[in-house]
Each structure stands twice: as structure tokens, then as C-alpha cells.
Image (cartoon, rainbow, N blue to C red):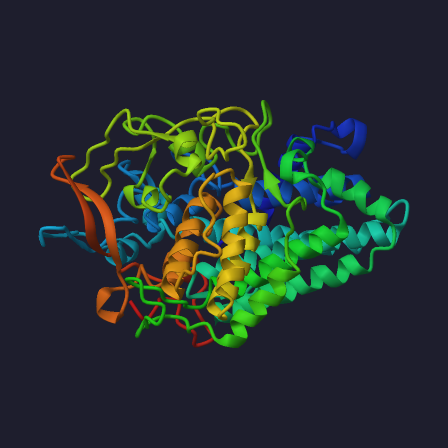
Length: 561
């Protein structure tokens, strides 16, 4: 793929591998010149390949290219997700963070309509150029960059695994490394297919063409690699050799909390959660203005079917369980993959609202039920941040929480304190079970999973199961809980999209009954209509299309916007 210089990314990844593992070249890798690493000189044995596979994934996939006000995939691409879901707002001009989450218009309680003079779709397209990327203004560039860099390094891992002599149970060790590469390839394709209208299937190192395919084909490729991961894990016969390799692939300072080395069965459950996610976030399940039967008449995807809901139910039933290890990242005191103060949306929101990069949205806060301890533990109203359009908020997020025992903490700026859930989590899987059951008519069962997640995060609110909720009220609880319990996990925009909220009101979308403070903080509106009209799947970045034009006939610009 022409966007990625494989030699540049190899060098960065290899040096990063040394940084994360903390081993010296002399002690472990027997290199010639450590300042000029090459594949032949540095990745010629098992230890070298493991170091490369670690650094290549964590640095190429989730750090390189994301330097701005924050410094990782979890602060910039995931930041856009939270902005477009209206969980946070921003007033900084860097990388379009102040424009990409602003709706086309709002209608206040008194009927006053305020219109955005620079709608999101126009902003995206006017800045989708190589020149804008160079100036740090092309918002749709970064996720593409990260995920194809991740995919590329995984292709190299697979190539190298075929040339390396492994110790111990060689087959089990080789299959562990292959599973690692297949998993992250599945992850990368899932990210591309869930965000971009079209993409490229790149499964050979250094080989590219203009054979773009639509996003659903990219998701199919993701599913293929996730399933291949499961098959490869099934071929591992030595649990001790698997553990030995995985404990080196995952940096030691990640291996705390939920991020310990997963057993083979745990990893398989992680895969099932991601397969369920691939279905859920790439189909429509409109729930607009309290209507479970809402329709979106113009979209880049299709609606969930009963068969889809049953597939999600089956996969999530065999997905992540409470107590399973999952894939996480944390900061460290030195050689950190991202900084504790700038590497996540959570860190960039953890501050007084007048000083934080991201500001907690009033729409986010209205998703909590009365008396939810997560509010008392994480937010205060000591100051008001004032903005004349949609970003005014009474709420600040408290770094490290207020100390309520057993209650979830949303963010921290302290070294190693905040746990990033890179892929699936127990809460996400449980809420997929909740939504699938509710949509399939098992409302009480679904509500029980919502209660379980709230109990897990220490919300302390009354159970909703057994209260006789209608389908509409059950979905209201579901949408509220996904917003608040999955904050900063890369899912917020996908949810708002599939529920229909980010689509134009003229095609059946929009968001209703919102809290919004207007008149420079003087008026609290509680029934605001918001017309976001956001592009559902992004165009392919110009950094790719200019250098690698489509030869397949598949358009790289979303024709629905």
C-alpha cells in the first residue's frame, strides 16, 4: 500500500520493540549496528521476532502518527468517536477536533434554530487532501494510517515466522505468534471496515494495488482472520510454551488488572466478542425519538435482521465472561507506549472543564439514571465551561475519581492508573447480550444483563429487570448504559450511527429530548432536537487515493453524502 513505507515502519517498529521489552541488543538480539536495524540482522531468532511482534503491534498500530494535543490511537481516532457521539466536546483547533463533532443544527426548547455554518461533511471533504494532512487538518487520515501500519507489520510477522527456528514445542510457539498476527489483522480490518466506505485488502508485505472493496468486504476479511486466529489457537498443544511466548508479546506493565495473559479459551471468547461486534456496529438498529421501529431511508449499510440478532446472541453467549483477561494498554513511568496525561480520551477529559482538552457533554451526563454513584464518583459541577453552540457544560471529570469504594473510575493522569480496553470487554459483551435479547423479545433477560453491568461498575441504582418495561423503555435503558459504561472504548460513534442518531432528520435520523445549555450558560434546555447529519462511513483518505487510485471500480468517496 503506497501510503505506508514499509522500511520506515519496520525501523520504527523494531526500535519500539526494544523500548517496550526493555532488553538490550547485546543481551538478547546479537545485532551488528543497533542504530541501523535490519530484518536480516535483528530478526533472525525467536527472541528477535517476539520483540519485533510486540513493538510492531503496539507502536505502529497505536502510537505512530498520532502526535497532537494527545499522543496515541486512543486519544485521536477514539477521540473523534467520542466527539461524534456527543459524549465530549472540544474547543482546540488541532486536527479538526473542534469541528468534527458539531451538528448541522439544533432546535432549542423555545423553537430557536441554530445552524452550523460549516457542517461536518463539508469540513471532512475540504480537508481531505495531502496538503491538509501535512498541516495536521485531515481528521480521516489517522485511523487509516494506524490500522494499515498494524496490518502491514502483521504481514511481516507472518513472513518471518516461517523462517525462524523456535525453541521448546516449536509448533506451539510458532502458532502463538501466528495467532497474534492473525488477531491483530482481524482487528485492523474491523477498524477500517467499520469506519471507511471502502478499503484495501493487503495480505502480502510490500505488495499493493488499487483493488478497493466496499466496507462490508473488509469486515468479511476481518471475520476471516478472527476465525483463523481461533483455528490457530486450537492447534496449540503446549500451554506452557503458549504462556511463555504470550508473556513476552504483552509488555509486563500491561499484565495487571484485566490485562493479564489470556488463556487459550479466554482468547477464543475475546474473538467471539469481536465477531459479534463486527455484526452489531456495521448494521442499523434504529431507535430514534423513542421509536424501536424507526427507519433510516438513506444509508451506507443495511438494517439488522432477526438472523443477525441471533448470530450476535450466539457469539456473545460464548464471548468474554466476567473475570476473563482481555487486551489492554497502560502507560508506564518510562518507555511508555503513550503518555499518562495525553494518551487517552479519559486523560484528556480528566481535569477542570475550563482547562481540559475534551469537555464532558451534557448529553453524556443525561444518560445516567438518578442516583448513579458513577456520577458522584467521577464528575462535579464546580465550574461551568461556556460555549455558544453545543459545548457548554456544567460538568468536569475528576481525575482518579472521588474515592467511592467499588465504583468505576473513568479517567486518570497518573502513570499506569488508567486501563485502556483495546478490544472487547466484559461490559461490551454483556450489553450485546442485553440488546440482542431485547430485540428478540426476551426483554427481561436483556434487562438483567444491563443490571449486571451496572452492578459490575458500582452504579448502585435500582434494577430495571422485573419492572415491566416496554420495548421502547428497555431500549432506552440499553442505549443509556452503552453510552456511559463503554466511554473511551472506541464504540461511541458506531452506536450513535447504528441507532440512527447521526443521520439527517430528513432520512429518519436525529436525536431528540436532549439537554443543552444556551445563551452563554444562562438557559438550560431539556428538550432539544439535534440534527447531526454526520457522514456514516468516511471517504478513503486522499493520502491513499492520490497515490493509489482505484482500479476496481469501487468508489472511494461515500456516495450517500
